[in-house]
Length: 267
Image (cartoon, rainbow, N blue to C red):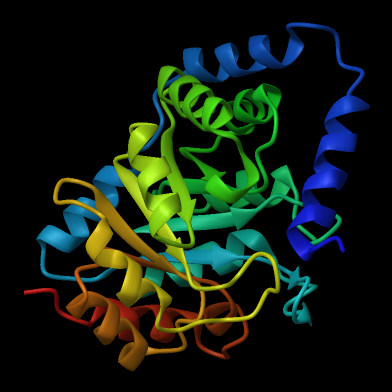
């Protein structure tokens, strides 16, 4: 029986197979973006906010999700980014998947243009061209999901991302996936508390898996973070940052919600 993740990955692989761009075109686009200037340091922004005594907040922009449906279908990415910046977000995460999350590269570009925060392209990377596309559209960081890739893909895409100047957030769900991420050289690891097979939340997952991530690797907790109490538990478990989407995008005061998370002290 196909899972949520299988369905999404199959759709992305079909789209990649149907890509009719001229060979080399996407690489050339990435190279033009590199010529325009360096990326903003995504990992460095998280480390800096954490070093200043804050739990770093990666604030997410998304219109909908497969599990919850519409969240903010009419959002204006630039305005949301400005609100997040006003609240002190260290970085942004922008969904660029259209079919399942209602996002687009335009959302990423608009959000990045609205401020100075580095931006993660949140999407399902399944082929090399996805990595080039992330750099070409202006992302500062790339998401790689361990559950979606074999070991060779994980290592190759991470290496390519680094060559293009992208920080790479490697997303895991359990101890074995953390081990695979480390084998691929990850220095920025996320633990997603949402099971990508069932899309159910396990809010104890990040606390349980966190000890497997060694010192020197930046730890990011993802999903199921509803407010400061959740953030406090994750900070106490050794996380440097939280990636928060649903609770921020659906609140009436996004700046205040980000500020409340960031107010959680780390030292």
